[in-house]
Length: 341
Image (cartoon, rainbow, N blue to C red; front, side, top):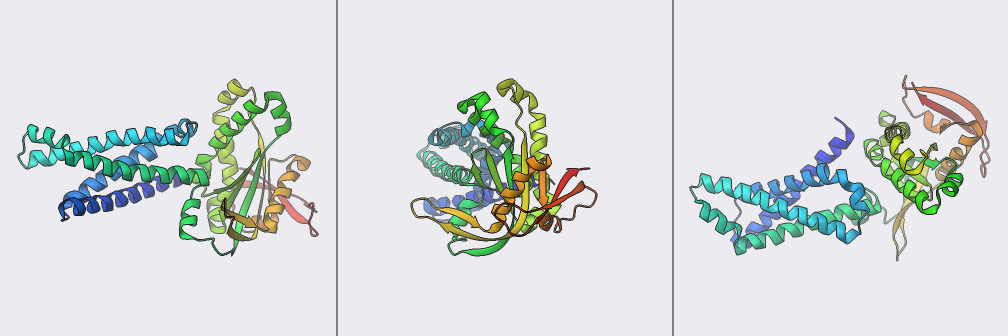
């Protein structure tokens, strides 16, 4: 099963659990008792929310991202209000029919004060869930949870894989397109990486101008050669959308990347603006390796230290390059170029 689908199904289950708990709380507050209907209604509403959020609205994420944050929330709130009435009305109709109630009773219940309170309560739960998702996208997936749990409140030493990916000839491209159109191209390009990031368990650490920095927990990056495959998955996306970029910008952006592995100190810093940062030589080395792509005329370079951890088998053609002394480093670094078989 594809990692993206697994992630969505996992989130769908979490939404159903959250809304089921909300359904139990609502029934306890309103009726003082808990019946099976609270779980049925709660899980059904969570299922509806999850399907719309993860499988429908996700297809329009690029459009929603272009809207002001508050407008995007309000658009989603309207969609969720339709879902609430559809599911609660549908379930009420089925249960009412089974209990021998008439259509008049169904209409009365749909426009009753209790239904209005239920709409407001459920819509509040939906908006909070949607707000959480939007903030998570703003900070980067998984970052909000780390802040809430205080994972990096105290510095942690850990091993991580880093990739510095940079658009080639960015200065020339910016001069040709003009700054506004160039940054529109960058925005489109950064949208292209979303699915490859999720399918390879990567985290987007930083955007620095026309460069994006990815990071993996060591095992996540090694599994299935995720830290290598992300590069080629992004390349596939760009090839699929070549016509779009040619028509809109007259250019299809190309990119290069450098990969390295090492120990970092991970910590939460700042007061007015808080951020989780990674500090260690591995970041500088990864950036320097990426700079060597032009020298060797290669798109992807990997350090020998990282390559020794990977179980590549027959998936890639490996070309050993020279050991280079990178700027700011005393010892040389073995470099390798990889191309999928």
